[in-house]
Length: 225
Image (tube, rainbow, N blue to C red):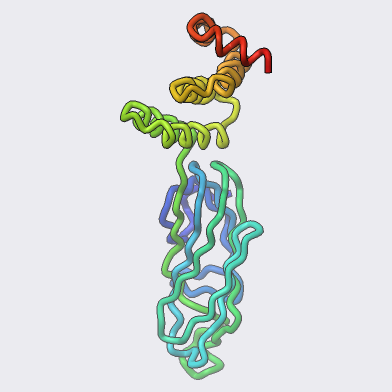
């Protein structure tokens, strides 16, 4: 596998790109282009930008596939086109990207020079829109909570847990925010999950004990239910 050496104009945070098939040094792409990417961040969308030359007077059809998601676009000739796919790729997830051109141009056969390659379009670049990491969601949630925006903070903590459910601090911070909203049953569940993930934490144990001491009526109601 080649690391940061492949001449693919990808904008975004990608640590690794596998060997590219179907790409030429002058950025003309043939009938099919395929490679595998692995990003250090979650990926929310991938966009292909290219140029279709005036040698395609009737236009061309381009198919972009990322993993199991596919997007098709029809573009007139002599025009820049783009094709975007919303995705939900986890950090460091290896994902295959494939571009298929419906039509190809052979310059030599059409009397346009000595180039004998079957060409589809000129690749401008791939854009990758990355998502937030679990740690970034936690930081965002804490800032929102400090500003008194509890609902938004809770959403950020939940996003962090969805990305990394085994990080105890996400559950603890979510429990703290839920406690402030008076949602004691839900708060206790996340406190307990934090302790389950890190049973050696005196801080988690202490705060849960304090919660029980300060909310005895609510706790009794919790166990009664």
